[in-house]
Amino acid sequence: MTTFSIFVPMRLENDIKQKKFETEQEKAAINILFTASWIESSNLRRLKPHGITPQQFNVLRILRGSHPKKLMLFDIASRMIDKNSNATRLVEKLRANNLVTREQCPDNRRQVDITITQKGLDLLSEIDKETDNWLTTFKNLTVIEFKSLNTLLDKLRG
Amino acid sequence: MTTFSIFVPMRLENDIKQKKFETEQEKAAINILFTASWIESSNLRRLKPHGITPQQFNVLRILRGSHPKKLMLFDIASRMIDKNSNATRLVEKLRANNLVTREQCPDNRRQVDITITQKGLDLLSEIDKETDNWLTTFKNLTVIEFKSLNTLLDKLRG
DNA sequence: TGCCAATACTTGTATATACATATATTGTTT
DNA sequence: AAACAATATATGTATATACAAGTATTGGCA
Image (cartoon, rainbow over all chains, first blue to last red):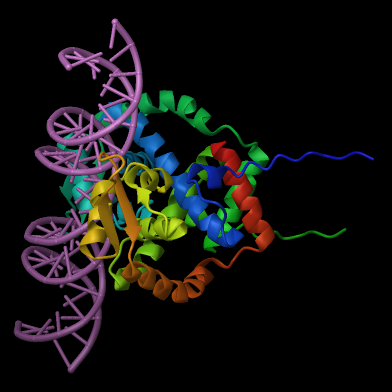
């Protein structure tokens, strides 16, 4: 007969110095928030040298995804990770840096059409070069585990 | 022979209207950020009627955890989910609402000792009453699945 | 046609956050 | 003891965010 010695890491409890959680459910909520905060600051640091914020980066990627088709502000907002952030002012920042163009839609003058510029595309591909490197930040899971994580998160919000 | 028709939900792709992700790893990063944002806004909405923000709530819970032992600001900061937020000003908000007390530590006058007040404890227990209700927001996973989620997140940051 | 609601965005304001820098106090070294 | 480093917190400033309220334009309908 063999006895296995199992190492239970208690990572989260350690990271936020909390003794224990009432339920796995509660721990999961905190765990997601903590992990998100961890990813966000890592993301912030890697984008800072390029002069854009994570949200601006997110919007640029959305625009590249539809390029060369224009997107109206509403489309951008509905694709954004943080639905509550202010698309108008965010896009204005990008325009001020010539990363996107804004133009009133002729068909419907309420709409504003946004397009990513060549400068915006160049910036993204420059950042892309470093992305593999950044993604190694979390290489601790196997593909199967990443899939499982995605399934669980999707189901959680389901 | 039987053919199974499998429904693949593609929840995240739907939520942010993105076609597909390059890798499961990249999807996981976005998925965590999106899920965190989803939890945060839900949390924001439930706490708003009580006049505190999620970060303030978090700090109050930390203080209740150590009550009646005092904590210095540094201890609070190291237990916080978002390490970067400004503990000084956060605690000052709580003090202004008489939810905590601040006093200079006599042994080491650099330190500031923080204690949760009775009013703070009362507020927490009032919110606690609604918490079960709030947690039903994400009751979509079984306990086993929550455990698995926690393990994966811990390992991710590992 | 004129009115009203809906749509698409913009702006104001209060609060929060990131990051750099400053202050006060204590510990350490020579 | 004087000088310097380390610790613990505070503050200044620029930017971001949440939420409410505002403006411009369009669509529908009596």
